[in-house]
Length: 123
Image (cartoon, rainbow, N blue to C red; front, side):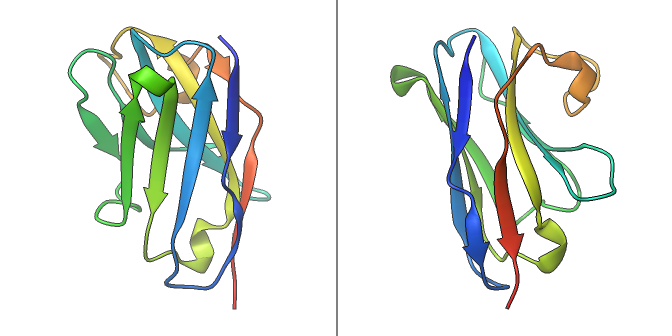
């Protein structure tokens, strides 16, 4: 599975961005979004299951970020609102075949990764 993330950029605090993850195939795959800030470990942000569209969010983004998918377009999305400077990071999308039953935001559960897209939140 090939993945390509896009949509990053520079935005002011309180602003919004929508990231996209274009995939060569998406049916039957859980989609995850991860981020890595300089000097920090990779962090799971959100994921959406393959079977019923169940969603999971890191506490740090709950209520601000929304994950979605369009299987007909083989694309996943991460809508990011009320962005904060601490959201600054390189964001990656990843996929895993089937549903993840244990730790859905654990990056080791994902098999395929796209290149990152940089999100910078700064005034």
